[in-house]
Amino acid sequence: MTEVSDAETDPEAAGAAIVNPPRQPLLSLRRLGLIAVLAVAVAVLAVTFSRGEDAGPQGVGCNDVAVVACTPRPGSHVLRQAEVGVELRSGYDGRITIGNVTIPEEQMQQALDPSSPEFQRLPPEQRNLGPRPNNRNVVKFQPGPGKAVERFTTGEVRITIEFWRESEGRESSRSFSYSVIVT
Image (cartoon, rainbow, N blue to C red; front, side, top):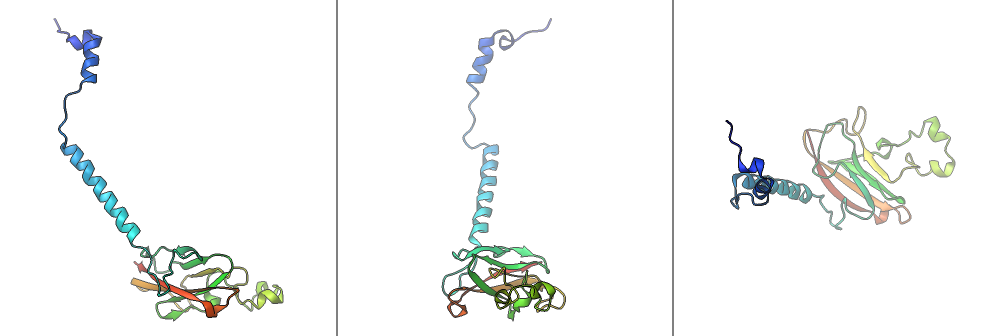
């Protein structure tokens, strides 16, 4: 004959076992493991957010009010042909320097070739703005054949952004630099 425990036959006894579970030690191996995992996650987040951008002498950087976004974020790992630079607020213009190489405006992203039919169709006042008449606030560059920088070298690459409010002219420019890691 099979024995039946009190918990199987008495619903109150079964409920009491659930309501009053056995005492657990304060620091069990499982709890210590969870604490260690959480500590590592917090440390990784702290390191990630502390690797912010370098500020230039004026204290500007990717967090400047004129900067909408840095592509990629400072300290990021990128490929040799990655696009780098910033998007500025409307009404700003800028230039980009990679290492010690100043990128010509006509090689920047979204620039129009002055000899192209598309550029020639623009009204004279827009053509007078140069090869980036409709997107002066996009200060980005992507290496490629025949460009000032054909590909990034492996290691740390320094990106310098000079920018200014268009209404004030380049004489009022500010600049900042940051680095990315090319893999």
